[in-house]
Amino acid sequence: METRSYNPFEVAQAQFDKVAALLDLDEGVRELLRQPLREYHFTIPVRMDDGKVKVFKGFRVQHNDARGPAKGGIRFHPMETIDTVRALSMWMTWKCSVVDIPLGGGKGGVICDPHHLSLREQELICRGWVRQIARNVGPVSDVPAPDVMTNGQHMLWILDEFEAIHGGRYPGFITGKPVGMGGSLGRTEATGYGVVYVLREALKILGLKPAATTASVQGFGNVAQYAIRLYTQLGGKVIAISCWDQADKTSYTFRKKGGVNVDELQGITDKFGGIDKDRARDLGYERLPGEAWLEQDVSILIPAALENQINRGNVKKIAGGVKVIAEGANGPTTPEADEVIKERGIFVLPDFLTNAGGVTCSYFEQVQCNTNYFWDKKEVLDKLDSKMTSAFAAVHELAARRKLYMRDAAYVIAVSRVAEAVRQRGWA
Image 1 (cartoon, rainbow, N blue to C red):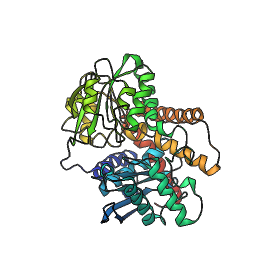
Image 2: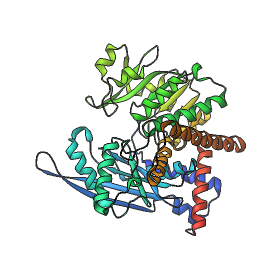
Image 3: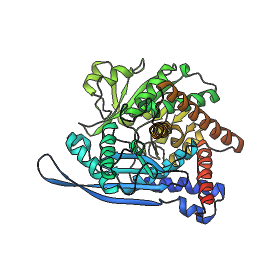
Image 4: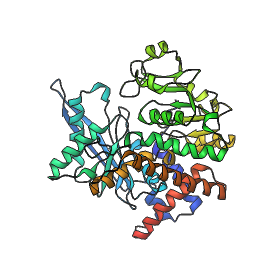
């Protein structure tokens, strides 16, 4: 993986600057939208299980809320940086806009590694995070959600602390909660299913039947697992999966000639998406280097892990038969790699469109919590399918009409909507 001089916020700004020029945005709007409206940095002191106090660094960035309350996850990651959070908050603004839900973009994080923290220590970090930011977030201002290495339990601890501080019940403050505690049915599947809803529509445009395609996937967390499951149900075959090995501090690609079996792999996967390499070998999986997922002779690549995974250092390793890249992760492709992919004519489904199923279902969860009326799973997934399909159709129509790269078309739609909201509010 290329890491030299990579700055995700600079990438996000470069992507925005390109589209701002296409749209001929005036200088005031450009300056407002290329940086966050607000950001918060704070420390979280926690008394660890050994009795010592350890101080963790926390963040919350609100990029833009012209179209509605800021929305975005909270990451726990040992390599978290403020520039990563800034970039993700900006991408969340475009993500909410491109699927046309009334929310803005935000993101949060804590520099920590849950692999090495007890549940008690994780709970104290969650409660400490919201204590530091409780005056600046809420159901009508900024609504957090789970992200990398956080889950529904973390969200419930955060909600509980927020409600204790404010003395009431505010189930719409946070999404990704457990079902039965204000969570929505279908939320677990939403991001991965959304990836495949968009992929399905792209395959129709390309005249390809899912059963005639194969895929290679990076990541085996929640997004990847459900994307693989639905893609397989449509008739496609995943032949390789890459994931991080915590014990070895490296990644591996697991390949199986007849196609991977998501159920058997889930049975040997830890809660962070790491596959047990020895048990995988016993099940007939070949173990390859981590980047080998990119080199497989498949029709579809699905990066569903972290940012900066397809870059100038490895983009030329993509096999000649690849026709579609469906970005399940945030920011997996760098601008330099984009140029190579564009030249090759690979159909790219950009991240902030393709993985918007999660935030769309989070919006559905907000709506259900605020009305205190919950839908059945079929209704949630039908609404999600409709939203994702409509968003893809709008982006593809613009790309075809103006002969734009799909990423540029998605940006044009998203940025135009936010810029118009900014103008109408009189901010610029």
